[in-house]
Amino acid sequence: MSAIKIGDLVIGGRQKIMIAGPCAIEGRDQLLQIAREVKAQGAQILRGGAYKPRTSPHSFQGLGPQGLFHLKEASDETGLLTVTEVMEPEELDLICKYADILQVGARNMYNYPLLKRIGRTDKPVLLKRSFMATVEEFLLASEYIIKEGNHRVMLCERGIRTFDHITRNTLDLACVPILKKMSDLPVIVDPSHGTGRSDIILPMTMAALAAGADGIMVEVHPNPKKALSDGLQTLDFPHFRELMDDFRSLCAYLDTREEHRSQRSYREAAP
Ligand code: PEP
Ligand code: MN
Image (cartoon, rainbow, N blue to C red; front, top):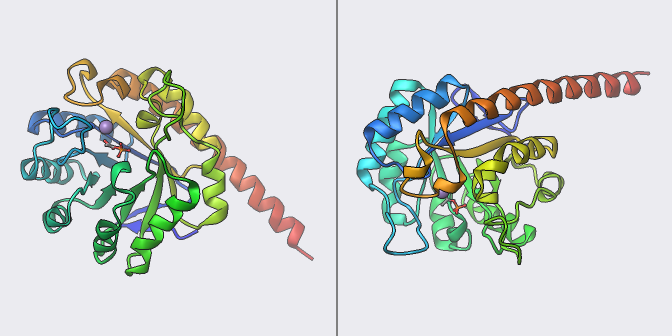
């Protein structure tokens, strides 16, 4: 496993990671309020889009550079690491200056010039699976980044498009153990985009952890009904607290199980 170290945080090690925050950065107060809350509940990384890849060009497109300044301020105040999406190579220098982790969105997983350009930076990357990508295509996309010299890539399963619209996407949890067999990159699961439904984020988070995910990414907002994007798949604060309670309990159980397994294999290997 090629664990990714960022400061004191290790992604892809024993500890499972929580990445939480709004879909889009909507303003300074909104982001600071969310950052304080997710930090208090134990998240390690704050997410938030400053440049938003919206399906409709008429929807809110993000605050751009101003959003990045808010992200940096929230990080400086709380000590949270930050992740934000890069859509164009021209934005890259500014984003590298203000954020800790570069997100490649599902819509850009096939944007090979962007992947190569990101591969020439020294920033960790969260690469999201395209909604139409096979596991092999997903892994090959990660190799575009790695081949340029940047090895700090984590893979993010965020649902694929199927015939069923009862969920926004079909969260492909079978790909988690498969990705872990086929590569040594950390795997993150995003049950917000993976389902499009805040009411099933909790069980899908539990399932993702049980399947071996190294971390979870969820959307959180003080008032999801008023969110400028993705409100339906966004947790409010009380539900995020509830999620974190179960997250902690399951992580503790999985850690103990891991401990027992390693002791057993140690004993079995002993002469
Ligand atoms: C996001 O994380 O807000 C996002 C746009 O995700 P995706 O690229 O997976 O749709
Ligand atoms: Mn979103």
